[in-house]
Length: 222
Image (tube, rainbow, N blue to C red; front, side, top):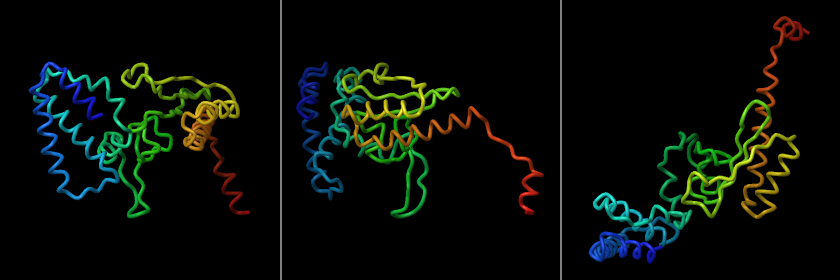
C-alpha cells in the first residue's frame, strides 16, 4: 500500500513537490511513533495508520489533488479498518456490563449478531452477510457483499429475496455462506439470524394472542 500511495501522489496534480513533502512527514511521524510504546499487535498497523492520517491531512490542504485513493480504498487491510473504527463509528451502541462480562453492540445491517467485534463487523470485513425481514409475508432478504466491486456502493451487494419454507431458506443460506467458501465462519451466525427473523415474521403475521383474564384467574385458583 505504501508504494501504491506514493505512486498516486507522484502522478497527481500536486506533482513531485507534494510527494517529497509527504515522504518528509512520513519519516518524521514514523520516528515519533517509534518512541511511543506500541499497543498494537503488528507494527504494520501503525505504519498504515500514519499513511491514512497523512492522506486525510493532504486532502484538506490540497483539495485539487486527485490521489485516486477513494477508488482504491478496497485495498486497505480489514484489520487496519477495524483498529480505526472499533471505538468510534456511528453504529455503536452503549456498552453493557463491566470488565470481562461487558458487551458492546453495533447496528450495521450486515452484522449478523450485532456485536462490535472484528469477526462480525460489517465495516471492517470485505465479505459480509445480511439477513433482514422484507415484509409480513414471511419473506427474508439475503445479501452478500461482492468482492470485485468494493469501490461501487450501488452495486456492492448481491441481493435475493427468499419466500420459501424455513428448511429451504436455511439450505440456500448454507450453500451461499459455507459450501461456496464465502464465509464458512459465519454459517452458525447466519442460520441463527435467519431463525430469529423467521420466528419474528411468523409472530407478526399471526398476531399476539390475548388470553381471557377470567380464565387466567380460574386457572390460578386451581
